[in-house]
Image 1 (cartoon, rainbow, N blue to C red):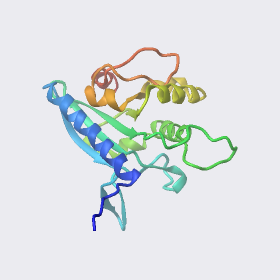
Image 2 (cartoon, helix red, strand yellow):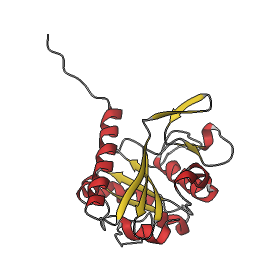
Image 3 (cartoon, helix red, strand yellow):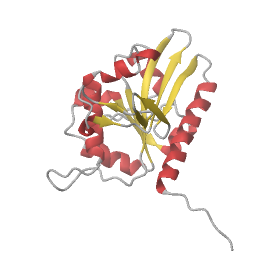
Length: 210
């Protein structure tokens, strides 16, 4: 009898996340002044106190509650070896399975609008400065959001119009194919729909690193 392995949606998601980190490594190889200090993956497990948690688990506030939990798909720290400056990046790989917004008031389902809102809280809480302190002093981070199609990016940007404009620069969005071709190149859009510029990540690093 012949058996065929069937991968779960979670496995496809993990593979694409790893593909993005490989694309990052390839982009760094072509830029000798850059180095990857450390990478973190959601599916790795580690022990914190008496608990086993996903490696990227953190909280957006001092209270470590389910409501305040945030678990990026991946994270990495990039260093400019010439200036010794470092930057912290979080990575979200979107498989277009989550709703962007909820049609029901008070709906607690996982939707992308809430995910971005949680990252806003994380930015303003500075909790990440404690969590990633062993790797540097970070005044901010950049959230990289990768999805499958340009149309979904524009739809997401339109639905995020009510989030603070002054935080839009800490977010970058692109497609999986573009990220795989040149992860650090000028392929990234900000969260702000009216911003038509495409940005490289290396320049962001020099501007926003700690």
